[in-house]
Structure formats: C-alpha cells, structure tokens
Amino acid sequence: MDGTRNERACARAQHLLAQIAPLLDDAEVQRLRELSMDYIREAERIEEGVTTVESSEQITTRLDAVARDFFARALREMNQQKGRRPPRSKVAVNGHRKGRARAWLVDEAS
Image 1: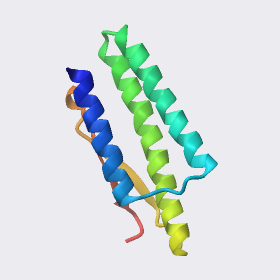
Image 2: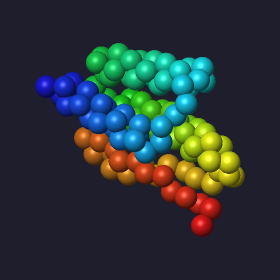
Image 3: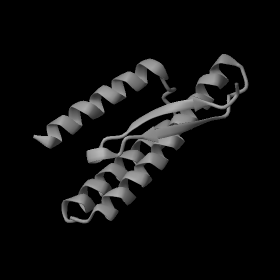
Image 4: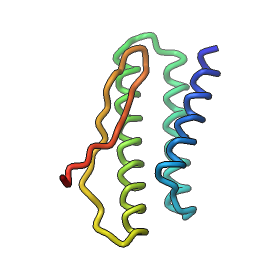
C-alpha cells in the first residue's frame, strides 16, 4: 500500500514539475533522469534490508542533493531559453517526518 502511495506522489510531482519547468529533450537531461532513477532504485534496495534510522536519513540526504542539482539545472536551462542570466537559487527542504519532505526554490537574486 505504501508503494502505491509513493508511486502516486512521484507521478504527481513529475506532472507538477513538467508544468512548472519543462525541460528540453537532450542527452544531458536523459542522463540525469537515468542517474536519479538509479539513485532511487539503490535507495529502495538498501532500505528494504535496513532498519536503522541513520541509513534512511543518509539516503534522503543523497536524494535531496540529486533534487537540488536537478532543479538548479532546470532553472539554468529555462533562463537560457529566455535569454537572461540565471538567478542564484537553492532548494530549501523541510519536513523530514515519516520520510516526507517538502522542497521549494529560494531565489537569492532579490
């Protein structure tokens, strides 16, 4: 049951991201997509046999780093398409309760 909820949440997040920041279909995007899927598969494989909280937190930290890189690249590409200088931004993450996290972009240009 938890897997279905995760799949729905993942699908919804992908849909929202596609609406907010559509990316070009280039080789680098495909490579990043495959890399993120590898991270997720590895995290799920490790999480199946792990009962300690520390390992789950390490996985979450690594996935957060992948997400930050992905969003930074998406912003750079969007701004390059529009022909302007990309703003300096970072992803703020909050709410690691029960494996749930909320992330948003923080614009440092203003």
